Image 1 (cartoon, rainbow, N blue to C red):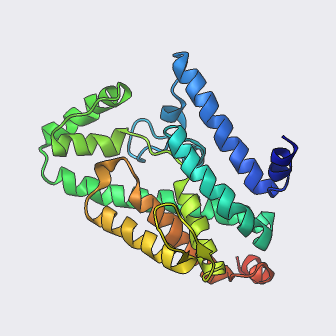
Image 2: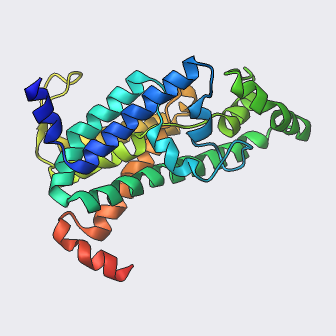
Length: 254
């Protein structure tokens, strides 16, 4: 027990705080859902900006919501693994700024891609079909239902189903780790040999791009949000530099 407490005590403050908030939010979400009080994923998850369910605060709150315990475990394991290393390297302030910049960047790219997807879908829909989804799609979505028609169902999925998770920010942390420690060898369960961090990051990004471009958007994974977190992380590091000592000029310029 003491050893476990010591491990938790050694986690830097921002990483520890993010872990606690995410874990507590999922517990509260599940308790309220099972008590038939409210589904917080529908209140705090991120909806497309043209949806009746969209609220501005969701841009932040969706980063602390998760779909289930497995979703949470994967994200929190990566946050614990990479977050504490990067926070010690950069310091708490810069780490938090980076975390939220990449999380917001993930949401921005995800929304932009949804915008183009919606335009592509609605080009092949009649005005009556579009109006039908606008009037009835939210009611179906709340019940966890959707239409099987690829156009009507696809339009409703983007418009009226929320996006949740810290994956965008976590992918930003993975990108930062790969840039800060490119030659560190990672040993992963699904890869039988050690792989350098820089190659793992590049490979992961390539897979996400393939899945996104390959129209795997209905697999319940926001691939472009993952890419958005990595993209904004790359831009951030290029502007600010890899070392915390270079951060001062960034604030002076902006």
